[in-house]
Image (cartoon, rainbow, N blue to C red; front, side, top):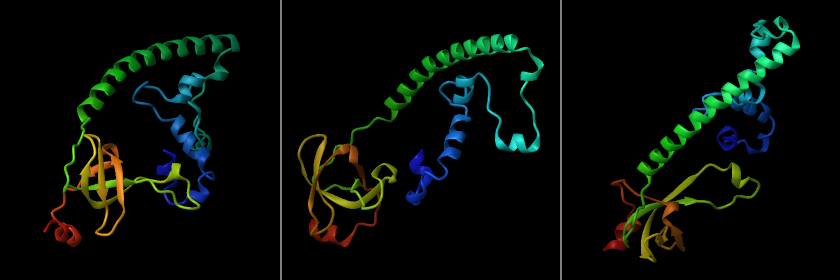
Length: 183
């Protein structure tokens, strides 16, 4: 999430981190059905816009402190029970969705593909770098069902990569160096 937020401004990633975390904590999660703020505090946190507009959604002043504390405890117990129910059903749904998308591509020599570039760049954090697919490349040798040797250009270095870092090339625009190699 941080890498999507900072994108190309990695030098300033920490300047607005508090805004990012506030947005994350106030967002209702699909899995639990509650925001992290609600699960942690038993209530939603007032946002700056609510404070600026004078919107008052807290009922703290209407209770004595003992009644308020007991209401928070019962509210949090109910929220935790509901969150547990959501978690168990969501776990099954997430497994089903993951298994339906799971695929192992097997590549043969001569196949065209892209590879995920994970090279480090000086001055940039690899954790904050967005994924970048390089290619097209050609499979020169199949080392196993999961590992292939690829060549990225006509005179490029050979790379040995796992199928998890490869994806098929589906374009009809084949580079000249690949056409020359296949003749």
